[in-house]
Every structure is written in structure tokens, then in C-alpha cells.
Image 1: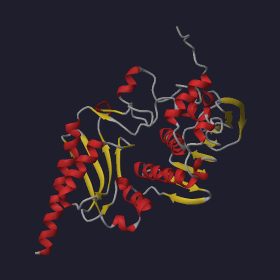
Image 2: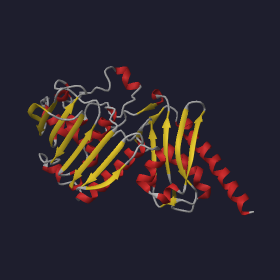
Image 3: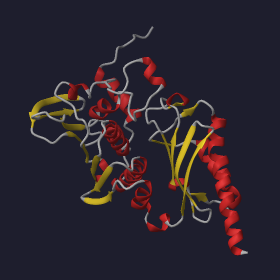
Image 4: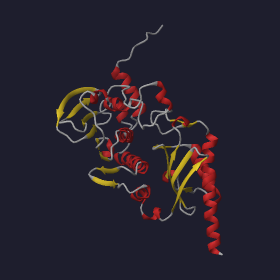
Length: 338
């Protein structure tokens, strides 16, 4: 009979990191979502070599004190939930308590944080998951986390990283979704010293302009409705003539969380299908609000996938109203031509 071994924390942290920290974009996602949960209104994201060499996220959120900053890097440590019942009504972007400990276990991390009103902040440095130093420092309110040399201690994982420009492209795509999801937050995104995005707080349409430019703004239609007094949908959809070769230009946001969901994507595509040529996909950026107990976001550590209590209801919430909107537009175009 084989012996049962109790794994050392350094081992199980790196196993967990395999699910949570797949690539540099995963690190950016986790850090920025923490900043958003910390009620930041200004977030700066800086990356070097596609995030492989360095990722730095700075925010003006509520910050952490000397007692709580080290705790943030412990496995299964989170401020987002405290009881089993909380899993049924998750309203924050992060909640699993895995991200920071996983990141710290596979990189060199430096974190500075200060709560408002404190005379000084706290600085912690970690390498391969081990705390190297904790000191008091002068810093601004909020939190700054720097992640360097990703997977330096796991050569087998490091060799699977793609070229820096490929990793950077994925981070850029992620940051664009974060800007669209949070038009009330100022984002600055810098890659290798070059500013890629610098958003304002002038609403979703301005956020769309920041990401996609003038041509997109001229070809989108606003939508704002509530389906069966339960599901609120707002945002913008593209005119049927404004199509793309893939789904890259489609953004679904559930309770502020960017997701990828086949039911919603299929419903919207079906509504557009009578107006589309083959291999063409519509543009949309849609914010969806529904009761927290009607959706399960605790499906996978990447939190991109979700499960709905009633898929048929979700399908109808998108197919029916968008079909009606497109039919109205089509009728107006026919009337104009005649």
C-alpha cells in the first residue's frame, strides 16, 4: 500500500498556481480585480516584456495595514467571504483566496499598501512564496503590487510562456474588457514604457471609444431594458452592417464581471443571423445585472465561466429584445429607402 503524504505548502501552492496563474494576463486579471474590489477609482497597470519580466498594478483603493498585508498572501485568505452562505451571493470579483498566494509562489513579489489616515504604509517582499521582509515605508494611500520574473522558480512552466508580444497582446485584450466593465474607473495601461490606454470616467460610450475608436462609435446602437422584471441589460450593440470576422469584439459583463458564455453568445447571434453574411459576427458590449443567487460564478478559478439557474430565461433575455430592436431598425431602413 502506498504511503499518503501531506504536501508541504510550497508544493500545494504551486499546484494551485497552475490553475490560477496560467500566464501573465492571469496575474494582471487577479491584481486588477483586487483593486476594483478595494474600491479603487484610479488604477495603473504597467508591464514589461509581456508581463514576463514585470507586472506592476497601482491603485488608490482602501489599502491594507501591517497586520492584514501579510495575511493577503496566505493560501485561502480573503476579505470577500467569511461563511458558506456567502458563496450563494458573491458580489465581488475575487473571493477564492488563492490568487495572491499562488502568484507569490511562482514569482518575486513586492507589495506596498497604506490605509487612509495612516502615517505610513507597509512593504512586504516575497520570493517563491516565502516572506523575505516586512517594513514600514512612506507611500500613498492604496496598494501597489509588483510581480517580477514570473515562473522563475518553475522552469518547466516558464518554457511554456509565449513570446513577449503575444503575452502582451492578451494582456491588452484583458485590460480593454476591464475598461469596458468599469467605465467609472480611470485606467492607465502602459506596456514597455508606452501608454496603450488611458481611460476617462465619461460613461460606457466613451470607454468604447477609448478601446475601439470613432468608426465603432458611429456604428453602434444603445440598448437599455429589463426582461421579466428580473434581468437588466444595458450597453451597445452594433448595426447589422457593422460586423467582424470573429467574436473578439463581443463583451458580456455579468454584475460587473467579464465572462464568456455560450448561451448568451448564441442568443445574440441568433437574433442577428437573418441579417448576417456567412462567417460574420456582431459587435456588442452589454452590462447585465441579475440577482446574485441566480448565477454561480464559483465554477472555475479563472472565473470566466458561470452557470445560470435558468438558461432558457437567459436565452430569452437576449434573443427576444435584441430581435425586436433589429426588426425596428430594419423597418426604418426600408421606410427610408422607399
